[in-house]
Length: 194
Image (tube, rainbow, N blue to C red; front, side, top):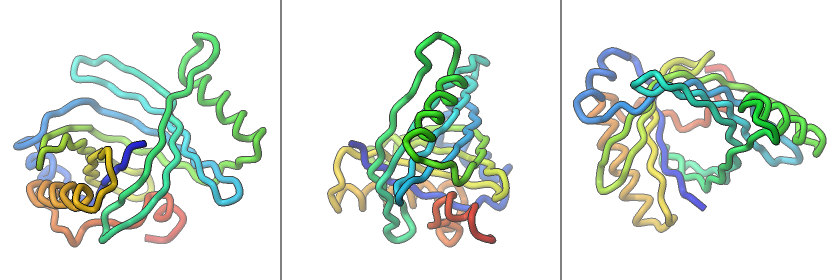
């Protein structure tokens, strides 16, 4: 079990934010993430079709299934995250594995309730002794966000607070004020007027 400590903030000036990130992060890949949220009896599962393109132009795809126990603490998400890849029985590709898994969800009573498409660039840096993933994303229907994420092995209050401090420091280095932090989940935002 991994504990995800994450914040996301609205980005008002994309070129300025990119320039700031260039100063202290390393570029990893560009991505497109197409998510479908499935629900049954109060339980939610996200099925993600993810395509990544590396610096050298190599493209990879995978289908990820994620379920979380979600919590927001002082505007920062602290989630218990469970995630795994699904693949087709035959070597026919990731898109087919997504279709097959979604058919499984339908047959077990889950229904699709929401979809989201996110495109952007993934970077990384080290801060406060943590490896931090940084995504500058355009979320269709919402706009641009900077997402900062640290994965912890423990949910101790001290570890979560240290990770939170590291994320807030990086947000400041990216030139985004803490007042731009968005504490709602994307799934909530897509169901509500902004």
